[in-house]
Structures are given as structure tokens and as C-alpha cells.
Length: 73
Image 1 (cartoon, rainbow, N blue to C red):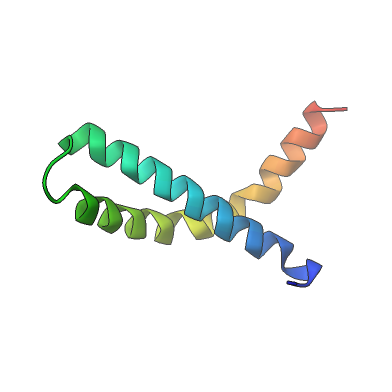
Image 2: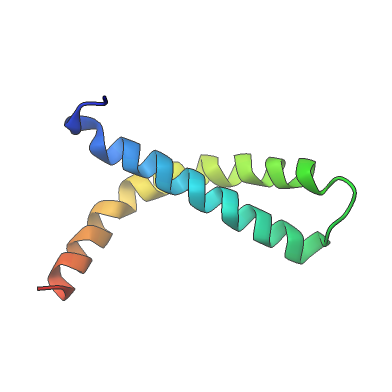
């Protein structure tokens, strides 16, 4: 198992990976439709999206947790 001190990194990795995967598929489909090279274009978009999403989520997640905790009591 991964030690608890890496919780934020592991969370950011999985959250950014899953969200980038799904959103890049949806946006690629909306923009291009189901073209012959859809999968290749989707994977290119996924990699680019993940490279941005991982550090963004790593930085933003603590603020989102604080806002959520203030709203829910």
C-alpha cells in the first residue's frame, strides 16, 4: 500500500487521470465526430489534458475541500 502522506498526490493523479480521460473523449467526439483516427486523436488530447489537469488538481483540491467542509456541517 501507499503511505497516507502521499494521499494528496494519489488523489490528484487518479482524479486528473479519470477526468482527463472522460472529458477528452467527449470533447474530441463533439469536435470531430466518430472519424477514422478518433482513438489516436482522443489519446493525444488525453495526454495533453492530463499534463495540465494533474498539477491543477493538486493545487486546487485543498481549496475545494475547505469550501466543501464549510458548506457541509
